[in-house]
Length: 183
Image (tube, rainbow, N blue to C red):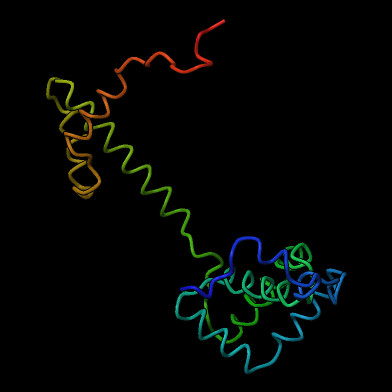
């Protein structure tokens, strides 16, 4: 617990003591790409990467980890790593595809996130519409069937809707403090 550095301790050490404080070994992006492709072209390395990707890790997280470690070790700058990342990404993706691994590019599933947001927004709007005391007809029954077909957990609680409406109706408080007098 008491072994952590104190604030300002880094300012008391010898300058250029860390690898990232010195000039990098590679300054050209093409050199950085060549370095990583040579490193990743080893069959043992590819087998390990393919195994990790097969478990569900994304190619992006491996590439980001590679260039961050390289920059930290003084191999290249962070900028050069970021610029080399798309080429390294494509190399890893094609190399593991030859091994039969279908690797995902990113850990986020944007289509699913958008779909879930649209679904919950639709359910909230239908719920609010139904709470306004609309007379039931074929249209409202159809909307209710659509909502019922979705999961019940997507629907907002009635208390949440009431709180949201109350917070929308509250007037803004007058600003207070020294600078709030108005001009």
